[in-house]
Image (tube, rainbow, N blue to C red):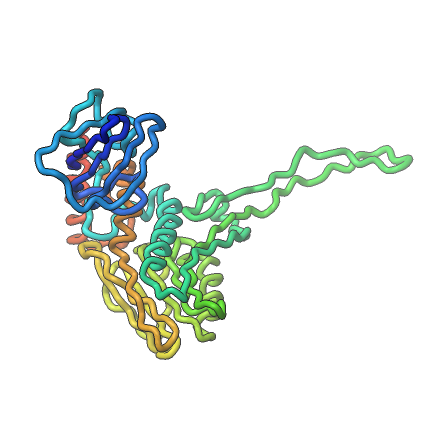
Length: 354
C-alpha cells in the first residue's frame, strides 16, 4: 500500500506528490526499489521528476491532478482526492528462487534482466576506479537431429528447408536429373550474457560473473561453457559462477558439491585451485555473494536477493507463471510438497484478488 500526500505551490499549477511507504512490493516502472520518493508533477506537461522525500506532513490530504502523473500504479480509479492507492504487483511467493521460472518461457527474459540489475547494483558499490559491464555474445550453433524440434529456453531454433527440385538439362540432353531433397542441419541462436569487472585506467579485466543458463548445463553447451571456464581459470581473473537452475549438469569440481538446490562458486585467482562454494535450497533466501577485486582492494558484496527480487517483482513474473501444477526438477518428496503448497497459496491468492 502506498500513502500519497502532496503540497501545492502558490499558483496551483504544480503539485508535490509524495509516496510515503510501500509495503511488500515494488512498482515495476520505478527506476529503483520503492522506499520513500517525492514526485514533482508539472500540471501542464504531465512530467514527473523523482527525488528523495525525507518527511511528509502527517494528515495532509493528497491531490492527484491526473492519472498520468503517477507511474503505472494499478487501478487508481477516477477522481482528485486520495488517501492511498494500491500497487498490484504480486510478490514472489517463495523466499528466494521461484522454481517455476526455470521451465517457463519467461526464463530468457529474466536471465537477461537479472544480469543487468546485478551489474547496476555492483556499479553502485564498486570503488571509483572499477566498472561493471554487462556483456553479450550471440552464437549460432548446430543442434543434434533429436533436438531439432525442441525450442531451447535461451536460444531460437531455426531450420533451413530445401525448395522444390529443379530439372537440370544439359546441352543436347533429353533426360531430367531429379535431386534428392535434404534439409540443412538445424541451428540455434544462443545468447550468452555475463558481467565483467574492469579496473581503470589500465582497462584490466579483474573478475567475471556468470549466471548459468540452461544451455551452459546440457549437451554441447556444457562443452562450450567448460572451454570458456578453462580460459578464465587459467588466467588471473576472478570467476564467480551463479547457478539458479536445478536441471542439467552441475559444474565439474574435484569433489562433489555440498547438498543444495542452488549454488554460487567464487574462484579467487589468488587462491586457486581452491574455490568457495555457497549452497542453498529453494526454502532459503538468496545469499550475498562476495566479488573479489584486485589487491589491495577489498571484495564487494553482490546482494543476490535484492537483484533477484527487483528483477522478479518489477516485471511481474508471478502474475504470468502457472502455479496450478508441480514444477519440473529433481525434487525430493518433502520439497515438492512444500513447493506445491506455496504455489497453491499463491495461485489461490491471485485468483481471489482478481
